[in-house]
Image (tube, rainbow, N blue to C red; front, side, top):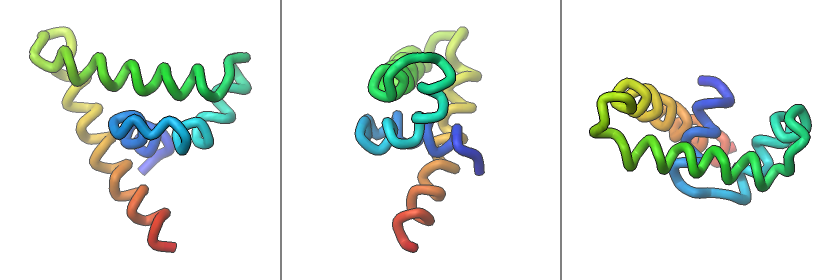
Length: 81
């Protein structure tokens, strides 16, 4: 499980606060705020979900579902420590 799986999970839940903490290094590299980057992930996740029936999004949606499932396991793991 990687960091992107966890980010995908948080984005799918719309968990802006926790997502902002996770994207700090990404934000620093892009010169954007943590909030901007986190909101971008949430928006992208929403767009993938909304357009899952569109041929251009089908594979992306399946990959995102897999990432979210892996991220959910990571979330449980982190919160049981």
